[in-house]
Image (tube, rainbow, N blue to C red; front, side, top):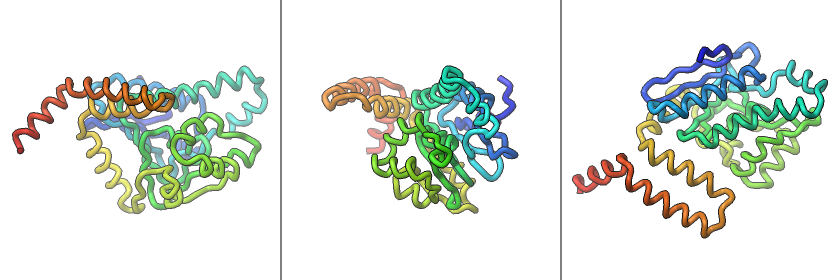
Length: 254
């Protein structure tokens, strides 16, 4: 597929997807969301892909929804609005069901829908100067869909404060809340992100895939059901080529 609003490349097992509207601070509209869905789908099918790395061109990761799109939203009826938001919900679901880990590399601002996009990733790496927030409340709006992810990422009261106050927080504060995983100095950010992605890509693809699937599917399971799923995944993992090679290597070492 030819992309116009994102950049895409696959090298050394790492699929790099870059939001490419720097003049609009990589604001989201239907076109860029559609291309993101296509790229996410492409990486899910490609056996060469081991990690997806999502970033933004220019100074910001993503500033949220395009203002032009917001203006159109105010004029649309409820069915049109539901159809538009369904596209973003589908993207979040695709990311959660993706067989590979999706890593957000956030520099600059990740706000509103942009913060939601980062939160929808499995891992978030941030530059020290990065900012995060859900300021939708300031225009009488609600970050509704991303709450399903935010609520699973940080504690309930911290999540409520973020969406109720619309406060923009630093990378350090986001790390304290557990919203993001690592914070790197601005001058070392690109190097550290590349190294992190390379380390992740070196792990067993089958083990990472099975781990992601099991962990996320436990959301709606009882304790007993989660244990039973663990039994099944344990058995499946033992039968993979990666596990067989890993055990063989471990035995030879000892």
